Image: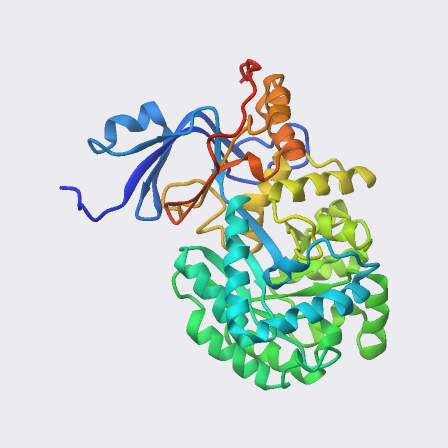
Length: 455
């Protein structure tokens, strides 16, 4: 007999998921893509009990189970954002010349406001609402140096049942007094937060030194010690985003071989380490990161907005270095994964490195999950996985509907979504098996008749 307390339903419609890296060719690598034209996701208490063709699964479903019909849409895993600052939501689109000026003029003054718990709570709620509206169900998040900013974020994420990584910023120098923490006190705060939140529900903790210039050697050493003693923690920071920043690091740490060498010296480079940006790296540095199992978060809208440079994705692949995709709001200009894909494609075109839709959507889902060591839980639609699901609408706007009506293949349709899609293309977002966002169904639809997809 079925337990009446069990929460179960079936989502039916076209379904796309990745089982492996599809590669960079126009055609995906064999066995890397799973696409079902009439697929079914059987959700039970936040888990995927079954993923199959609807006709195959239907005879095995309980009588009277709710079936949510997403015919004409496209279901895929929820998007993952590997690097974002929730506390910078309200300073997006602030004019700034380059990174260091932007930090001093906008970021630091804004982050001072998070000393007030009520403010942190309000922004955390708004950030998560916006993230779900654009289909992002998992992110690795910078808070501020205030412990309350972390408590506020994790509390809001747990109420929504979200899988999130986050951490308190560590910085004990070269910042406003209101943001600077005590060298060891910041680590004590972090240890308290780890005890309160790490592994609770779907939450995980990321140790978060802002970047090398804002931490003393003592703070970096203490952070490395915590990481060595708790290898299930993540670590997030910034690396080689801006040439002025690199020169500053060289002045502050003359004993180190290079910028990466600072993090290596203090034991911060490992398999759960994410380094945002990594634009100005040589191939030797990329290989060192690859050998450690770390990943670089590629933040294209931020890199373009701040004029930081063009990220060489192909050089990373040649070095065996894992990369992930990220919004980097507020330097980034959009929380939407689709906007991130569009900018990543444009950066790739300038470097002669075309980004296919296969590779792009893989990166936002299973690729990012693998880079963050979360692929045993999210990033893929598979039996036993967590039920975080994004439903895209290829006809969300009149222009998108006109374009997708001419698409003959799934690859063409995905590329159109990647280049023309925005938050309006997110029809629904599911997290932990629950509907957490649904777009207004009264949106305009084109009457253009669609062309059937080729196999």
